[in-house]
Amino acid sequence: MSPGELIFIGFCSLAAINAIFFAVYIWFKRDRNIFPGILLSLFLVCIAFRIFKLFTNELQYYYDIRFNINTFFLLIPLFSLYGPILFLYIKAISIKGFQFRFIQLLHLVPFLLIFIVNIINQQNANLPSDNQRHYIIFCVEISVILIQFLIYLIISNNYFRGLKKKSITEKLPAEKAILNWIRNVIIIIRLSG
Image 1 (cartoon, rainbow, N blue to C red):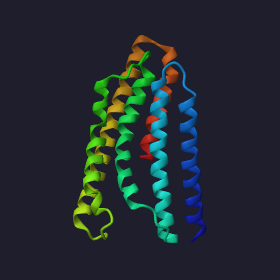
Image 2: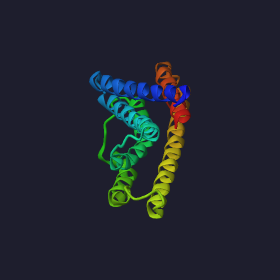
Image 3: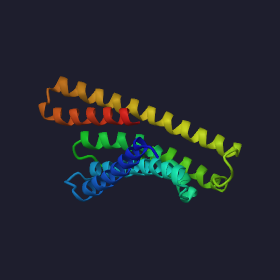
Image 4: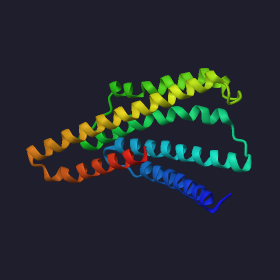
């Protein structure tokens, strides 16, 4: 294994540990409005799972370490939570007194559909890589997840622009810090997604 690959594995493990640490920290350090903290914690846990998956794929490749492939097969739906959690987080920090409503659970429908497809298709996860059905389902799932993420990025960006216009027209200087935070979160997610 080259030094570059060792550095990659080291950074992956450090990033996953940091994400889990901050998720736990944010989870327990909540203020009056608990929903933004919960959403940010969930987002960090999803990111940690994604990093852990990259890390374990590298270890399997180089050291022939066997992990339960079914577990990773069922982690794919977690990636479909990035967009909804991002959008709900932005709404939660931008609306004073944000209340979670039952209708907002509709944002989880793509996650549930992909999760159900994965459970149904789980029996094919252990088959050889030339299993065409498994490959097609995997490609469709990843395509749906990426398209959904792009849609949520666009929706989040448009929501941010609406907040920015409202802040300028109503001249609300107190909202500037929240707007800067939302802008930075969207930029970071765009760059990392």
